[in-house]
Image 1 (tube, rainbow, N blue to C red):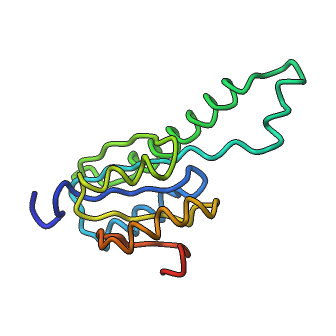
Image 2: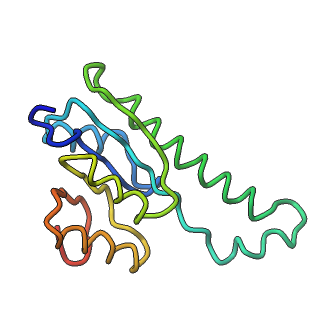
Length: 143
């Protein structure tokens, strides 16, 4: 698949961190022609657990909205990439699921640091395993 490695570049980050300009700049340094953008759905807040008591929403609706937000963030990033870059976008329900895509990609760019300590450890373990990761943000002491 050329200089892009196994299957191009995987860009992964939480929806709030996926800024199209930052993703585009990171991909310029990677010289990618095939890109997959995976937006990790943000974790439900503790306050959200109480929202169904209002009668205005349900936990399923809150989860669906979070997934839609992540999908929109990934789509915005893929739409702003140059026309000669083949792009796919997807959502992942957690960091572990997103990082399972490592086997399909030669390079992985992590945008931002996961907010949860457990998720930062998952990313740090991937770094320690020798996967090709370029990390933007602080993850487990790595830069």
